[in-house]
Image (tube, rainbow, N blue to C red; front, side, top):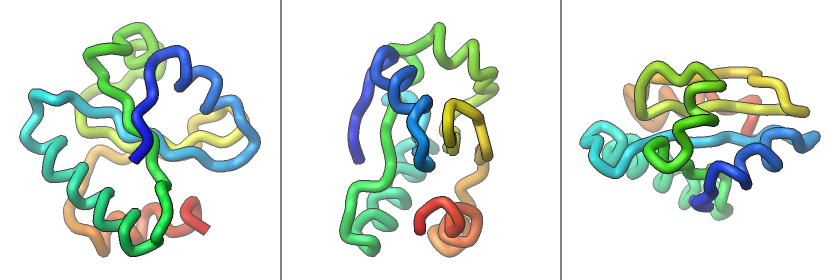
Length: 103
């Protein structure tokens, strides 16, 4: 997982390809479980796929994107929010939901 900051996320989300941003907080237990699931997916794919943004260090961006809670997965393409996930039921669930963006 690639850690990014508030400035980098602005640049990243404007790119042409799909980019998946994992918005979390280091104080959130559910975020830690979700992070392990995403790390497992990256290990299976054998590549870094997700960008990690600490919500407490990017309050302006989080507010602008109307993130209502963490953990949150946000999928961007060409500056547009394409999908948003707040539920992390299981690894198979995440693979099903993110499948189109991981190809």
